[in-house]
Image (cartoon, rainbow, N blue to C red; front, side):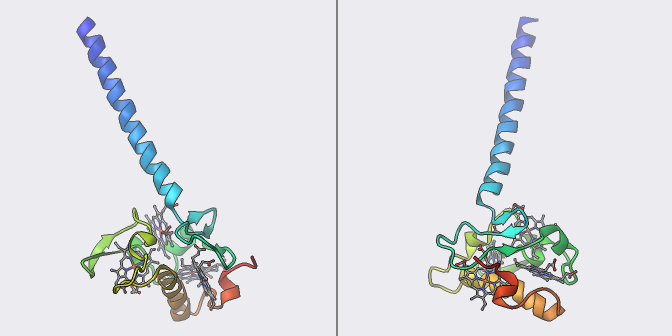
Length: 135
Ligand code: HEC
Ligand code: HEC
Ligand code: HEC
Ligand code: HEC
């Protein structure tokens, strides 16, 4: 009986630490995410010079041209696009910090992804003031 009690205690401790780790993962996703209450505000831009950009994440999953999460959260390995693989657990800045090299700087990554689809679909804002609220 006594052994069983210890076993149960160990088990619940293990369970609690799993919960703790899950909590940390969820917390860190949110802490470093650029999605905040219906806006994209990427913490990787240290100094903001433009106003906040509205972005309805849920609505965009149903927008025309969006076939899956990887439409925006694409995944590359050694510069090669891996089809059917998505990077939704990674922020854009994880890859697009643009310290020289071939990779598109973060600001262009956002602009090209957001704007080119709006132009293609003839829907959604395409001007600076259309996306960036007045600061
Ligand atoms: C139209 C583009 C677009 C589509 C489609 C899209 N996302 Fe995102 N998502 C974004 C952008 C932009 C961010 C902010 C990126 C950053 O912070 O680096 C983001 C952030 C996230 C985050 C970070 C945590 C948070 O606060 O939400 C998760 C998780 C996520 N997306 C999951 C998904 C999943 C799952 C799908 C598909 C069901 C999806 N996304 C489809 C653009 C998109
Ligand atoms: C796993 C790393 C990685 C992540 C995460 C990532 N990218 Fe990319 N992305 C790349 C690489 C590598 C290329 C190809 C080289 C280049 O054009 O910079 C690329 C290309 C692009 C391009 C040009 C080609 C195209 O598909 O239109 C845009 C725009 C872009 N990324 C935007 C984004 C945005 C916005 C996010 C976040 C929602 C994001 N990327 C997340 C690695 C990544
Ligand atoms: C794959 C295509 C696609 C991508 C990528 C995309 N959008 Fe859109 N967006 C749309 C479409 C389509 C609409 C029009 C939806 C409608 O009016 O029903 C739209 C509408 C919008 C609107 C207007 C919403 C409203 O209520 O009128 C904003 C703001 C917006 N997008 C911001 C962004 C931002 C910021 C990004 C990049 C982080 C982005 N979009 C990326 C397709 C896209
Ligand atoms: C389709 C939407 C869209 C359009 C159009 C657009 N932007 Fe952005 N821009 C974004 C998004 C999304 C980000 C990343 C948002 C963030 O984290 O603050 C961004 C980031 C920026 C940043 C870096 C962050 C900052 O505040 O300093 C600058 C500068 C900027 N945009 C300038 C412009 C200018 C200038 C124009 C017009 C020529 C423009 N943008 C048009 C969506 C857009």
